Image 1 (cartoon, rainbow, N blue to C red):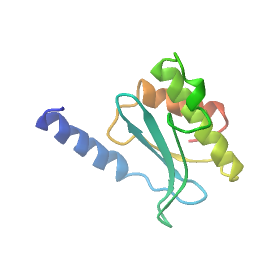
Image 2 (image 1 turned 45 degrees about the vertical axis):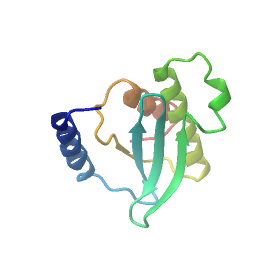
Image 3 (image 1 turned 60 degrees about the horizontal axis):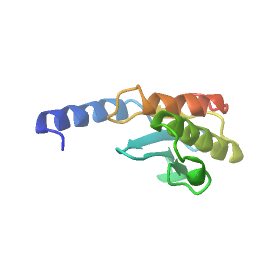
Image 4 (image 1 turned 90 degrees about the horizontal axis):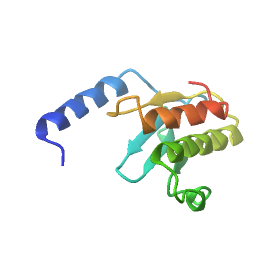
Length: 121
């Protein structure tokens, strides 16, 4: 478990990042949650208050293809999946919300995977 000091830093970073961005239906906010085993992403339209699409390592579209893959490769696949789902809705632009996580490792790989599939940040 993280110390109280580290937790305060994360909360402060999340508020700072989240205070600057806002998602709409035409340009949703891609919100990331990263656990030790899995990574989750949601495309959220803040103006109407609903989630448009979601993807994670537990999604049935990619769950069976992850055996033996590294976490960074898996995050890239999740980014590709969320980008494809947004394209199916006709959405090509999004706002990237890294939350309390630094932009490196799995978070960066997810963003690169979404960009490779044609999503623009």
